Length: 290
Image (cartoon, rainbow, N blue to C red; front, side, top):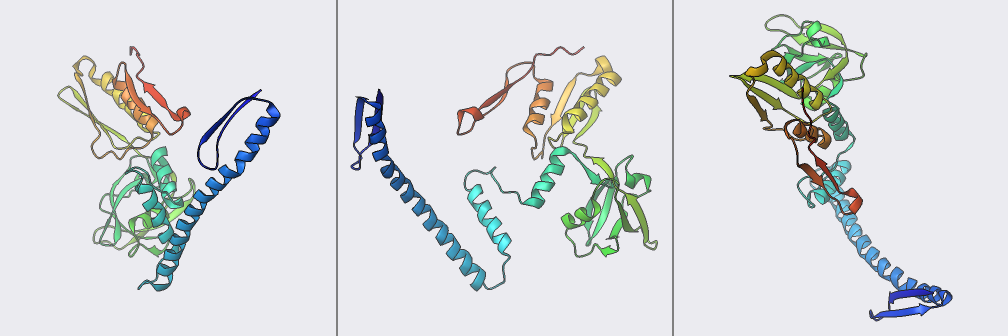
């Protein structure tokens, strides 16, 4: 036996109880055109809106006072759609996605220098210890004026970084200006550079821990610094200050892991989505550290 419920064309709910299976199949079949028509009408409205978008896009492309980049227009429209949902939804193109992967993995193929842009060229803030840059003798305040004979002046910082980074083991030649000396070239072999996301200091028995981002390197870095503090200061260690100022975020599981290092029990975070299977909760583990 089969119970079938559906809406008539007038919108009234009709119930058929204890009908033979064949009758139920016929009735259900009669209801399908109504559902399909309703869905079709909804789709038609969506397509009309997309058509309006296409018309405006074409008008901007043909008539705007300056020439426009079509790819930039489409990406801006996509970002507009997503940012209208909430402040945290956004679109990542290939370049931005690659940058995000570097930040979340916490490592990349590069030279090992902290840099900034100054007067149109790259200024080395500091070489990172035990990296190709440090081994080659690069110094703070050195200026990189060219990469593989291509002048840096006129590039944006992200473009310059793209030219300095590359596959591990590949080589790059940079032209360096140091003080009043003549420019000279240095050829370096790129190596795996790990982004240091945790920095630590001791102040009067208080361990200061600065976490700049939540990447795959964060938990190992935090564990290393805490272990070192216990090893070096022992009973003199009174507590910790965790500095998360200007931390842009990163990997959720790393943020949970950092929280778990300081919490004994209780819920750390919960997530939920439109569907029930997307819901999850993470709790602190009661661990005894010896």
